[in-house]
Structure formats: structure tokens, C-alpha cells
Image (cartoon, rainbow, N blue to C red; front, top):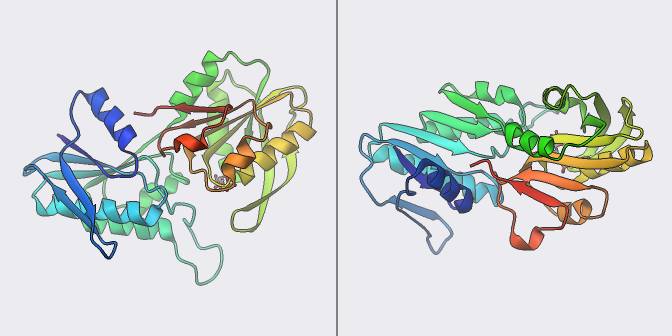
Length: 288
Ligand code: R5P
């Protein structure tokens, strides 16, 4: 078994390697003058089971391309099996056509990873579980929820209501609520008038006087979760916690999340958060 890391989240890869009691494999990664990416595996991997860790986080196109080049290098080096480990699977939100003449990028990325030569994929908290079916190779879908739930349980919060910030997240929130002693569930009715603009309309469920735990797969610009938190406060929630596996944190997420709406914003390290983006309410848990 050999483990290699792309450049997207070296710290997580190092933690995984430490957990497994092994070193990350040696690999050269560099850029040509024109920006093209060069990768060379620096040991024989002939006949090996190779795991390549690379979340497709920002800059997403570079990280995705680097992963494809790593897979191709391993295939041409006669690895026996290549597993692409994507702690965060980017381009996942376009998982169907919602208007004419759009691309389904979640499927396009699946095709690229497969055609580059991956034999297996392991990904965490896909935006939509059915993306597994976009692959014709074995797919392991794993979750950040055990880590998030352990942390929440350790806080011994009282009178919890688990809140899905949109209808699409109800199954995820329900599973969370079940694990939090069958806490009640509330759902926010969210609309999007434009890409990256979240408008919340209504809360379905009782949140008055309760500790609201908003659960999502990702926080990107922070619009969904902060608009949701504002509404929950208006509806009388006494405390609001935000929980998400993927801290995408595109601007102005940090500004929104640190505005005092949340007791805590709890995320995992599938995507690295630059030191300068840390704020007092942020809790980062490791999924290594
Ligand atoms: C949407 O369906 C996702 O689950 C997230 O709610 C969304 O992508 C978060 O984006 P933002 O933080 O930009 O509102």
C-alpha cells in the first residue's frame, strides 16, 4: 500500500499517514513556465495499491487537474490499483440539469477521474449521494458526521432542534437528529434567485427557546447558513450552532460567519482553512 498526497491538503494527508503509521510517498510536483503541472512519482509503485489524497477545493481546476495527472502517472507506472481519495468532491452541485444547455459537471468529473485510470474512489459527504452512481468503478462514500456528532455530544447541549438549511438537506439532518437522542427536526424553506445567493423564507418546525443545530454538507459563501441562522434567531432560537463537513469558505464567508450569529461554526479539515481565516467561533475537527 502506498499513499501519496496532492498539494490541496498536505496537512490532512500527513495526518492520515500518521494514523496509518506510514510515510507519504515521495513525489515531485512542479509547474512549467506556462502554468502546466508536472508530477513524477519518485519510487517504484509497480504492482502496488496506491491511494492518492486530493480534495478538489480552491483553486479547484488546478487541484482537479493535478489529481488527474497523478492518477495518470500511477497508471503508467503499473500500479495494481489506484484509489482516488477526494475528501471534498468539487463540481458536485451541478449534478443534474436545472435549465437547458447546462453541463452536469459532477458526471464530467466522474468521467475524467475514471478515464485517467482510477480503479476506485473514496469521497466524503458528497453533495448528493447519487453521484456515486456516476461512476462505474467501486465507490466508498464516507461521512464526517461521526466526528461532528462526537463533538456535539461531548458538549451536552440541551433542548436541541436539528435544522436543515434547505429541503435538499432533510435526509442528512434527520440522520443527525436521530443520533442526537432523536432530537426534533426543523426545515428552512430556502430559494435561490441566482447562483450563490440564498434567500430564506420560512422555518417549518418549532425552534422557540431551543438550541438550533444547523447541519449542511458544506459552507461555501456562508449565505445559506447565515440567512438560516438569522431566521432562527427571529423565530426565537436561544442558541445557533452551524455544522458542516466541508469548509469551502469562499468570500465573504468568514465575514458572515464571524458576525456573532453563531455560538460555534463546527467544520472538518477536508479542506484546509488558511490561518488568517480562523475566527473565535470556528471549531475544526479532523477526519484523518
Ligand atoms: C446547497 O445545496 C448546499 O448544501 C449548501 O447549502 C450550499 O452550497 C452552501 O452555499 P453557500 O454557503 O454559498 O450558501
